[in-house]
Image 1 (cartoon, one colour):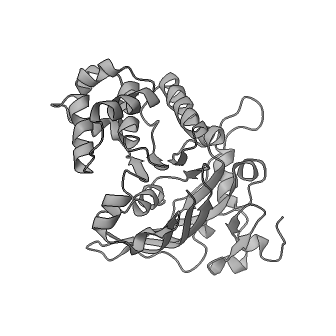
Image 2 (cartoon, helix red, strand yellow):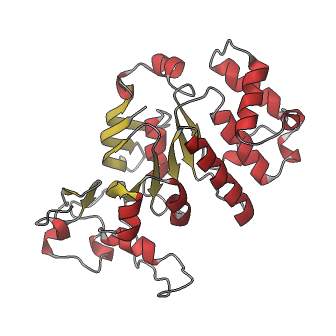
Image 3 (cartoon, rainbow, N blue to C red):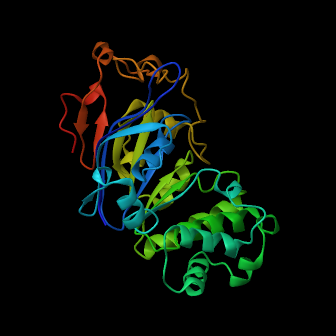
Length: 313
């Protein structure tokens, strides 16, 4: 099921005025492909995911989101909830391990999800299939959340997202707060699900994880997707100075010492009318005092004046 996002903008209301959390984001994802969304904190990654699944609390979303043949922002809330949410598209939320209710067993919480979405099939088989898909024994269903390890809780939450067999899953920081071995297990789980034909949006700070899972990568900065392309192109030939800076911050066994990007991103209450990275960019030129265009690349685009006169192929 293809996902197409065009001119997606999301804004929150605040006492100080509107917060421009996501602005004019574009990307396409073919059926069975996975996209990684990377960028520093508060750049709009989670807001992008919540906008796609229409669960943005206190915000307004504009633009076009087409899933398959349906423009999901044009659907009524009841139609989207009945036909799409958790059935065709679901989400593993940030801090998901803390979302399990401590006073109910895992099975009871699975049943609650199914009832919420008016499921009328075989409840027991559906739950057991979801548990099997994340390599958990059905005996876990009788336990309470406090009886599970961090990795098991994360698998349970992923299983909940898979209950109604959606084709597209948004996973927001699914490996945060897990130790390295458990992170590896979750990554391998996502790889296995991808082999089964499921599409993912993986939101994370960890560019190393994205290199293992994502077919395409979008780099977010100050609410904008400043670079989008194939995973290979982003890692081997990054174009935007921000993308280059992110990759240079990753420690390697051989090569230069990691570096960091000096400065802070601009406020999204009153985003600048110039390139939002200009104050931190070592390659800034006079034209950067204007918002950059989206320059087409071989597998996506880059928002940077440095490539205005180049045919990027």
